[in-house]
Length: 117
Image 1 (cartoon, rainbow, N blue to C red):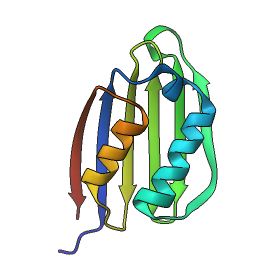
Image 2 (image 1 turned 120 degrees about the vertical axis):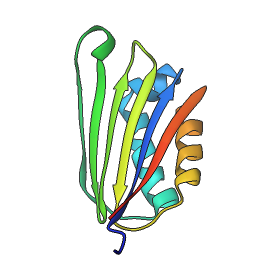
Image 3 (image 1 turned 60 degrees about the vertical axis):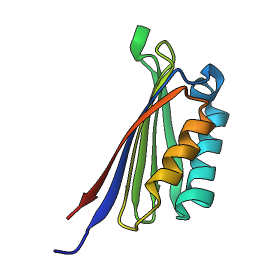
Image 4 (image 1 turned 180 degrees about the vertical axis):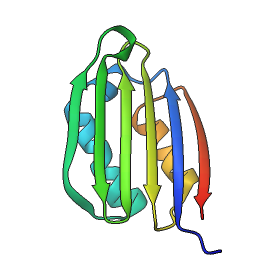
C-alpha cells in the first residue's frame, strides 16, 4: 500500500510568551515553516482566532497548504503550543520539529511522526 500522507504532532512546553501570544509571530512562524522548512505553497489566508478563558485562552490557527494543512493551538497561561502538520508530500520531521522548538523558544518539545496509508 502506498503512503497517503505524513503527519507530525508536536506539543511544546515552556514557550516564550510573546511568540505564542502575538499574531505577528504566529504569522511569521507559518510563513517560515511553509517557505523554508516544508517548502509548500500556502493556500489562502491564515485563519487565526484568539479566544477562551484561563488555561484555554490563546490563539488557534489554521493554514491550508497545497498538500493539506497546519493547525495550531496555543495556551498563554500554560506557555504551551500544540501543532499538527499533515502533508501528502513527504517532509523532514526532525527538521520541522527542531525549527518549531527553536522558533517558540520552547524548553521541551514532544513529537509523534506518523505515516498515513
